[in-house]
Length: 321
Image (cartoon, rainbow, N blue to C red):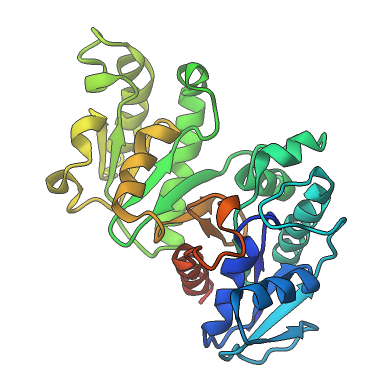
């Protein structure tokens, strides 16, 4: 029963708050929070949590309500709720480094992540695009896929954190093959879906409307999709995104493949924000995450919702099992 590690993320945000909510759970597998111990105790006092922090030293005991395993990661400077400090960027990255190292060396069952603030890490002079890209580089894999999921919908992305004007150039036949191969592999192996059905969004309005609104579908996207369809893989050709997400179309779909971040994720989050999760496909370990940001103004107020982290932990434990 290897532990599941949970990174607490940006210390000035709600990451520590929602991690404390994990003390309400009972789990057979140890769940270990990577965080500054004093920060957690201070935030617990502010929120009125009565709990016992246990320094994790390899125990295999189950988690019980009122107790929380923690691996101490020291803050670089004291933290104030809601106030970003670039000096603590190294603290945030230390959490990610430890969680990735443990997963890569077989010392953990995987990792679930609380939110980080990309801007303050970059202000510290550290180039940082996000969790997904960090774990990809650490694992040394050529491509990973960001997929968000609710109880009824999974949306994977061909491109992630790119300016909109850069998206068409990034959608190449090579990238599409890499993304689709990872998506198919992980739906089959991690989610145990033997013959997944995938719906694919076109890039342009009306999926290009036969070339009148763009030719990417004709010249790049559909030829790749035909390759998989010829292998009897249940995959659509490119479909207009404005009608793809109707209940009738989605009722039998196992996943939707969207071309860019804001094409698919607004629909998914409108259906299940706060209970959606982010899964990084293509890594050699399990990584899930919350679907929201650091919510600096809510830190220490008791108004932060922990439902997304709870679901992220649930899925990571399920996949590990």
